[in-house]
Image (cartoon, rainbow, N blue to C red; front, side):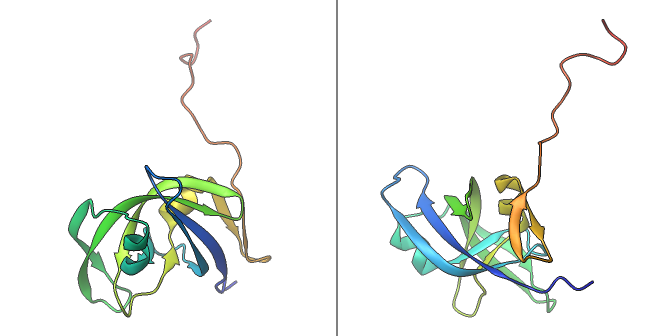
Length: 132
């Protein structure tokens, strides 16, 4: 089955200044992309700072590029997480990537084209197997 694509509205918030926030409508959900990409202009609008420069990426067409990364709080469809976000440049798609989905604790429902809770998060056991 081909999943197709769908979009969500997302809110991006400065990690240390909750009043600095912007809504990004119609963000492509892309489980094939590791990172979330938001236009650099939008990130600078809420004063997100570049934390990593010249991070290498391999585009779907095989082209190698570099982009900067910053930190932000992301919210969509009742989910929230802190994540690294790519400063997208003109011509880049804005999209919600798999790292953000994992931070949300969400998975994609391909039939309803929406995000749903992934369920309990696995954690280490406090007791070794076979102990009392």
